[in-house]
Length: 199
Image (cartoon, rainbow, N blue to C red; front, side, top):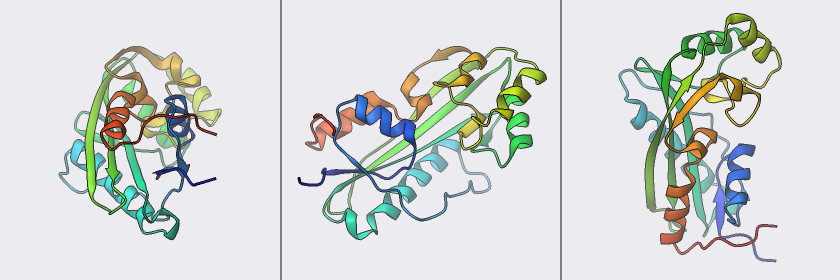
């Protein structure tokens, strides 16, 4: 069987699930490089796009990726001009969630699609506003103790146990999960990568 024409340059199970649900055939091949860090004064959208490009470029350097399309993506949370990535530890996760509770924040997911020749065929950064309900420190600490917030931008998973934190979502829900599927599927369509059954 021929290898899928598309590589997802991400180890995120949420992105895998979204692409599979969209009927996209792909192979997971995350790059080996460490994730970029925000630069001083860098705008959140610019950082998210830079991180997505770095992930796609990292996968493109691997031999298995040659001659195939590559999709890289990065999701961040931003509030008060701050960029919240993945928490460093449980204490950091509690601090993030306390900052976000009873307020609205933005979730940005940037994606980059590289052609088999290594050219950037598509790139976009999509924003969704998420409003949190008041949760209280005890519930936040219990949620963090369960481990789900670790490894998640903004320290929560909207599609998981973290759903209790959310009061409202304005914009793309899948964008908060990890990929703005309307925009991604449109980019894949224009690239000639039609959805199909995924094994």
